[in-house]
Amino acid sequence: MKWFPTLPALTVMIAVCAQAAAPIPAEVRTNGFALGTQSYTFRLFTFEEACEKTAAAGLHTTEIFPSQKISAAMPNEKTGPGVSPEGLAAIKSILAKNKLQAVAVGVIGIPTDEEGARKIFAFAKELGIGVINTESTNAIDTIEKMVKEFDIKVGYHNHPRRPNDENYKVWDPNYILELTKGRDPRIGSCADMGHWTNSGLSAAESIRLLKDRVVSSHIKDIAKGGTSVVPAGTGRANLEEALKALKEVGFNGPISIEHEANWDNNVPDVLTYVELVKAQGK
Image (cartoon, rainbow, N blue to C red; front, top):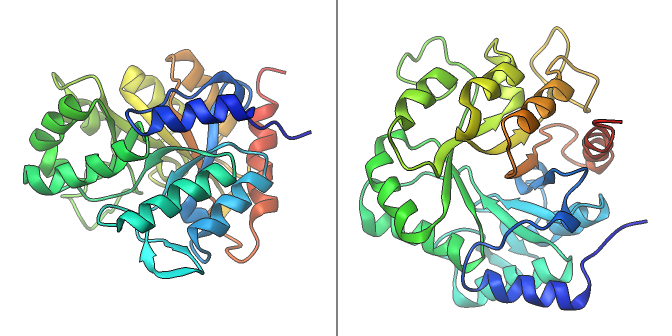
């Protein structure tokens, strides 16, 4: 049986979202984890369709992927900063219709200038989003100012290591620790378990190294003997140990399923992550 928030609870959630980042209540969590989808998983579809697929998987939270078409009815409107008032209203309506809470947005570039950065944070604030995921390390001074102004967390996301690009460092959790040292505690890591695996790292040990600097996460499994994304529990990312590590460090932020495979029909694959998370601790 699928659980959905009661109408009063949903009304309160939406009202809170208009003002500040809504907490992620226990009722929308999966086995204690705020598990939802990264809408990039459904990048071939509109945001409206992505939300419908997320709800069909029995999930109640989502991470907004910027630049996704909002709906068939609004083909020229895309999610993200700069959306029109009508587009923003449509995003809110779609979330409410599917009984979803937007908990994160990303991965998105954050500029160094305060005016440009403020537009991104204001967009997140308007939707009650609590985490912005980025790789903009050069903007950390501006980011810290915005974090304090808006009370929104920022997670530095990691793609796989780039052997031919020594300037790409966010794949390394040690670099994230050094980058965020002495910074506002709301700045940390968007721990992408699959990309760490493809960097030759243990996702679980990377999480244990970062501790409370983990503010959000992307979950994906990686093929044994390969680098492609596969259904949860069939690959080599050792997601069970990574989830255990998240509990050990007291993580309570959003986890976004980012299944970058079977793009035309990957809800069945998304469900493998739901079942894996449900099975933890049993």
